[in-house]
Length: 325
Image (cartoon, rainbow, N blue to C red; front, side, top):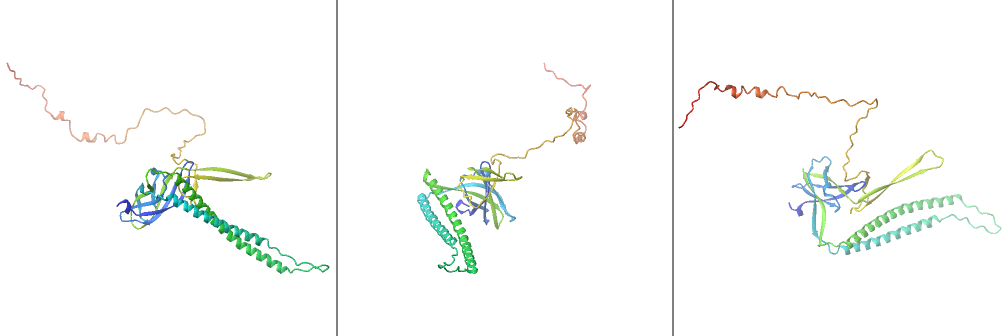
């Protein structure tokens, strides 16, 4: 099976654990196991550490991963990529301006409705005061509250849309700045993927785990305390920065104070005794016999007498000697 015929499974970033230096990312991909068992999980960043790749099957589908490796796929480079990115940035800027206009018009409507106030009828000269029905005032107040509730609900949706478009614009501008300063030696585009060998058949969900550098987080503590009070509130905030080439929007993020590249085994704690200090006992010279010592020579004893004991004795026998003159 060639690289072009290997089925591709699109992956989505699920969780990220940010360490003191670096991050551990987990992606999920789902599909049907092919006949050969080989698949290619796409979407991995270029900054990943190939030695940190791990893969496993999620759930009890009867499928298991027997091999996992990182593979780089090359293809022709899109020569119009900067122009495509520039057009994308311009489109997102127009969308951002339109979203801002819709948000601003909604704010204007809210200000106009909030300015609605009941006005009593004018008093004529030398005339008595005219009474205003209370029901009219209450109906106007209910109308304003109901109208403002609907306008604020729509405003939240417009602000969420504006934040989304602004985020997409920021990502597009960053991609354009990277592409404009990139000068590859050859017009070849590369993409990273994980080639997995699966054992089993049917539907399966695969979790791919890998480490990436270029990510860090820093804590910030804020303590609020009222003068004269007996308690306070400690607030921990984390500032996360990353340049891994992936978009972490909407991804579950966990934080760890350990170092991703350093092995962290639990230390072996020694027991401590409280009491009078005693000298260490002197080592004893006696050692117990090893197990099975009695049967060590069983084979030798069962072999019979020694060969020299069975041979005839030559003591006192005459040995002929021939001499040549």
